[in-house]
Every structure is written in structure tokens, then in C-alpha cells.
Amino acid sequence: MSFVLLAVVSFIVVLGALVLIHEFGHFAAAKYFGVRVETFSIGFGKRLLGFKRGDTDYRLSALPLGGYVKMSGENPLEPGTGDPAEFMSHPRWQRFVIALAGPFMNIIFAVALLTGVFMVHYEHPAYLDKPAVIGWVAENSPAQAAGLQAGDRIIRAEDLQDPTWEDIRFKMLLNPDQPVDLAVQRGSQILAMKITIPSDKQTRQPGDPGWDPQDPVTVKLVEPDMPAAKAGIQPGDQLVAVDGQAITTLPVLQTYLQKAQSKPVELTILRNGQQSKTTVTPVLRAAEGVEKPYYRLGFSAPPTMSITKLSFAGALGKSIELNRRFSGLIFELLQKLVQRKVSIKQFDGPIGIGRAAGQAAEQGPLQLILLTAMISLNLGIFNLLPIPIMDGGVILLLIIESIMRRDINARFKEIIYQAAFVFLILFAVVVIYNDIAKLPGLGKFLP
Image 1: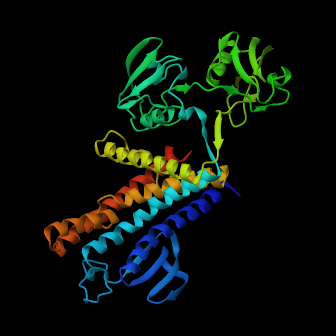
Image 2 (image 1 turned 180 degrees about the horizontal axis):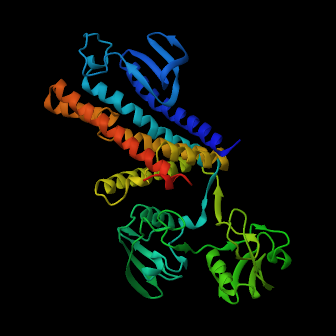
Image 3 (image 1 turned 90 degrees about the horizontal axis):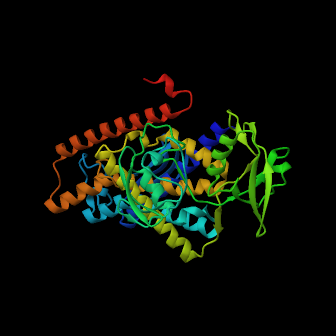
């Protein structure tokens, strides 16, 4: 299956599942309070197939980009008939619960998905849970410009005390073009520093300061007929030093080899608790997926992974913790967007989500489930934003009406809804434009 087809199929499956969960929340709450539901649709447009049970038409529609639940009398701009089964005939607190139920289900779904995954397979780079000790700093990077060095330990980042690498990663992602205050321990000294990561800088990945954490270099695969294989290096070997210099993370060795070029280097290897030394001569050769050749030995050493299964209680706790943290990051990102400290270009639309879904599907079902959980959380929170015609807007208007003890003027509501609709359309256009601009080979054709 081609990547494009895989991305499209994955996107439709993920979106369909999330819409089903979201709309089921509205549907279940409406049914519970006795509101007549006329249509439960996955997708928009022409009805393709379905069935009718009671008052409700359950259908699959032609355009699979969303879905909806249609309740009797839900449009506040249309006069009601007084039928007790109509949405507007119910008390405001019941309408509040019905509007809240959709986003609530998305958030609960995100928690449930992560809990299930962590009970089966909880895998993450081991260094993420460790103190933020720097193993390597790239030349001409924001980290080097800030004065950071290998061996430094970050003991504070803004308001975070004794952060782990996971804390640091999120803090950097959320502060492009913004100076981040750091307190760094170097030996017995505590140094105050500021690091700024330009958003337009071509870094290895978004929010990358140009450092790598300390992480043991353990060989996973050895390429045949390459210097590492000829020198007897085996999977499971830990590379401790090169020419007497400690290898605290893989880029340390990679940088050293580029300087040594084709000169022999002495590697110190740790195997089964015993150290040994061997001499290896780097060769100039491109790696798989890399066009430009560079000096290398012919082995792979991905980050050390922590792999385990969590109990239900442990998985649920970890899921709630991660969802709480991601929720905070989403709100912080929205706040920075309003303050114009981050760009709307950081948001992904349907094309970006489709690409992410395809990449996750290529890595396996667990990665696709993890991505689905994150999108579900984003969808739930986005729908809670106080934008009229969205769930959060409905909730806000209901709260205002409850305080006023009367309905808001219908004409005023109409103006609000029209303005909100135009805003959402413009937002969607901008996000999709940015999606297209990010596509390899297409962005150069855009103004």
C-alpha cells in the first residue's frame, strides 16, 4: 500500500472513530433527557446507507470528514413549537450537559486509549524520565550560543524545578523565538542562562535547541562489510569512549568521526561487563535514507528504550498524567497564539493530520492508537473553546443566559453565529494553506 493511500485510509478511520465518540456523547445525553434525535450521521452530505430506529435515522453520509447529531428544535434562531421533546424546550442545565457531553467523551476516550495501550506496551526513551544532563552540544546551535556545554545539568527551566528531559522537551516546543530562563549546574557552579530557539531556523526538528541528552550508546544493528563488523563489534555492545574521549551520547562519536575522517580511531567497548579496545577506520559512505555521504562505522544505536507493561491502576494514572500535561500544553499554546508568541503555522490541518496518521500506521497499530488519543484530546479541548456554533460557544451562551435569567436576543445571536462561522472558515483556510505549504515540493509554488 502506498503511503498516500495508507495516510488517507488511516485519516478516515481515525476521524471516523473520533467523530463517532464525540457525537455519541451528544446523542446519549440527549436521549437520556428525552430530547428527540432526528439524525445521527457519520459524515456530511448525501445519505449513503443506514437505518431508522424510533425517531432517529442512523446514517453514513458521502463526505467522511466529520459528522453530526440533529436534534429537534436545536436551532435557537428558529421558533419552537413547544414540543417537550425539542432541545430548546429543556432546561438550560440539561442543554449545558448535552453540549458538554461530546467534548467530554473525546477526553474520556483519550484517557481510555492511553490506559489500554500502557497496559499492553508502555515504551518510551529511557532518558525522558532522567534529569536533564546534556551529553552533547551542536556547533552554531542555540544551545552553544547560550553557553551550554556537555555535562551541564539543567536544574531549572522557567518555573520548572529539577526538570526531566520530557519537561524540557515540552518547554522548548512551546517557546519558539522566546528566551527561556535556565539555571544550569556545572560542577559546583550554578549558572543563569537564556536560550532562544528561532522558529525559522532549520534545526533537526521543531523546538530543537541543538543538544542531546546523556544516553548510553548501545549497538543494535551492525551492517555487514562495514568497519564496525570487520572490527568485531556486535549488537549489545556499549561504546564507552573514542580515543580516550567519553562517548556520552551518539552525536559525540558522530562529530568525532567527521573530524577524524579516514584516520583510524580506538574504540573502548563494554561487553558483558568487560571492557576491551579495538581500532576502526571510518569510511565515507551514505546511510540508508541519507543522500549525502559522511564518515561512519556502519552500525545503528537508537536511544535506549524503557519497555514494560503497567497495571490497570498504573496505566490509568500515567494516562491521566499525560492527558493533563498535554491539556495544559494545548491551553498554553493557545494563550501564546493570542499573545502572538507562536505562529498559527504550528497548527496542523487535515493534510498534516493525515500525514501523521500515515506515519503512525507505518510504525504499527499501537502508534496509530497513541496518535488517535492525542487527536481525541485536541478535538475535545478545541470544541470547548468559547466560539459560538461550537460546543464551547453553546455552553458560554447558556451560562450568560443563566446569569441574565432570560434568553439572549435572537437577532444578536444570529450576528454572533454568522461572525463565528466566518471566523472558523477563515481559520480552516489558513490552516489548510499552511498544510499545503509544508508539503515537500509544493510549498515553493505558494506565495
